[in-house]
Image (cartoon, rainbow, N blue to C red):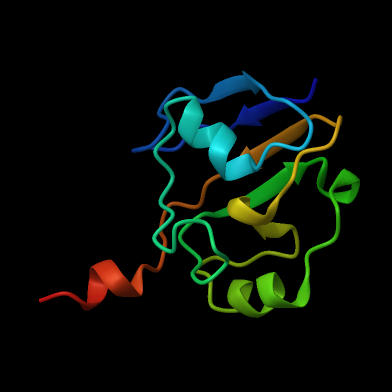
Amino acid sequence: MPRISVLPHEELCPDGKVIEAMPGDSLCDVLLGNGIPIEHACEKSCACTTCHVIVRQGFDALHPSEEKEDDMLDKAWGLEPNSRLSCQVRLKNDDLVIEIPKYTINLTKEGKR
């Protein structure tokens, strides 16, 4: 069973959290199911970047990202080489350490007046 260590995030998870998950689960679903309200404006369809995370440990153990995810990540705030969209990460048996960036770009939310 993989363990997901979430580094502290000022608003979403101030104290950080360690979560046990099931292989095959989506990282976004695991975060949401454990009280970490990560944004997911496109309802987890890989059409935005609001669920962007940075994988600090365990990145190489993940399935590689697909072209659609890579194209979306190019638009993410704070993009790093080990960035992923949590809605596209299917967990394996490996532990992960993730960081949720301080900011996100939500065109739907930010575009409203």
